[in-house]
Image 1 (cartoon, rainbow, N blue to C red):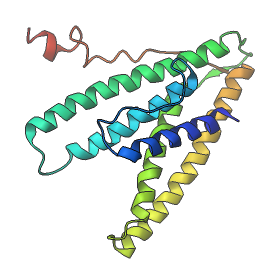
Image 2 (cartoon, rainbow, N blue to C red; image 1 turned 45 degrees about the vertical axis):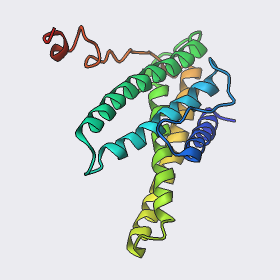
Image 3 (spheres, helix red, strand yellow; image 1 turned 90 degrees about the vertical axis):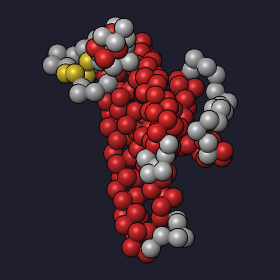
Length: 201
């Protein structure tokens, strides 16, 4: 099984598991052991799935402003969790390939493996929810047809992105690409770096 096959499998498992209860407050179920890459991939998609639905809720036109603010704070925390987990997955790759000697002419990719995996996880969300739209009995035929066309494109993207991730990992393992891990250094959540926070003290 390639890494992208493993990731796609776990992302779909997580998405399906969320939609059993379909509740942003549900606890994450998993049969995977904490500290393993399988656990981290499952949790990565769980975070994305919950945040997807939080983003839906906050866009309700009738939402109470205090509820919207609470959800916005929750989305901010979720984004930080997501970033931390992506960096954790990149550390897994970095440790796996740290002994690889770069070949002459080796180049650096525009993004790390885990940030590509992050895009794949979110793509699974898009596929899931676009498929739901194609199955709506209350939608117009035009809506269903348009969503079916979009779903086909998303599935093609999934195939292409999965292939690109596996190729990137193969290139790193062979020394054709150099892997570096840069911490995101997000500033808006840090009270010492966000002027709106430290100037208000």
